[in-house]
Image 1: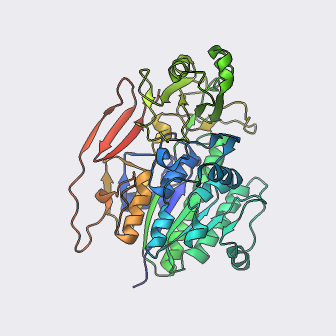
Image 2: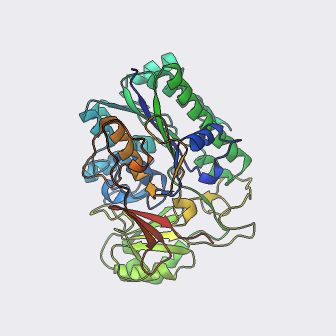
Image 3: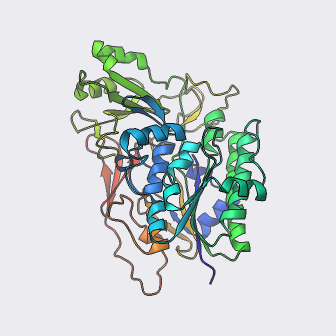
Length: 479
Ligand SMILES: [Zn+2]
């Protein structure tokens, strides 16, 4: 029998409510025919690169060390985890890009190959398999700039150009969609048919980019969603043509919200903290703000109280449960021994004059202004809109026409696929195997259904669910 293919297909920024039979016929079919986890969430903070690292390792940001899209690195300053160059700086400081073994390496040790291709930032794609070069994996960073490697191994680039042609131009109105088409051609032509590919991870950078620029539900955002759905169909067709049974998990790395006109954090307000404020590093991350103490002048208690006083602030996370209603970083899965910020402040809800803050069709004609978040899609807050993700599992290994209400997370996706490929799990994973989605295989007995308890984090309106040993922050209700 032809070796089965496992596919993880990530649609950056896709919201569950965007799935329908018109824009996403392929995804809609998988949702109807396969298993849908109806209560699924990404990691905190709800940002692309913390999610990518969590997907790649089955571990939460507190274990991977990738806690923001932009982070503060001692002796360096602000580093972008979207840049391979900056990720190498982090690796030089901390000893590795991520602090836990990757799913790619886990598979390689057991004789299985993982291939990754992504049209998001080169850093995002790199995070999906940072140690590919030492474990025999394949990575195509479709958005790589001139000083970043396009492929691992380097020799793959010439094969791609020969088989598919060079990358399309990086400018023009449809540049990101052209790149998506090119990437799906590469995956469908070179990766899917290769029997050595046991697990393929395909990351579509759209619709996140369109959403940030144009807003949720804008026609150009819907066009980007359709393009991602077509790329998914292209990969399924290629598997079918080559007779490979395919298990696919489709998900996204975060949701999105439309922000109000004054949702921008007022960073000047930190001067309230007095002269010691100069010993703080503020690193904005869309709907989240990471605050690092570069010296001990400002006690974390003072910092947390300051954050809670800010009109733009929503849920606040800090090192410890010291100032109610602050949520401990550890509870949110983002307490890392050396890489955590001292404070994570997520943006609150501010109503707009153009419809509900959480969902409107306001369009903005100007290009995104980096100094404001007004009326654009953003994410990184602690609202359900940002934390909720679609999670759809389809193929011979998964149950048919099933809706599972047991909470699940992005961190479980890599664990589940690695388990399907190898039959094994790793004790350090934070993610669990989603047994409730699996079809019973001959000779295997289902583990008992996990115990599920749900409530809110103490003194806050943050929803939380416990499934066995796993904790899922479900988000605060939207206003
Ligand atoms: Zn994203």
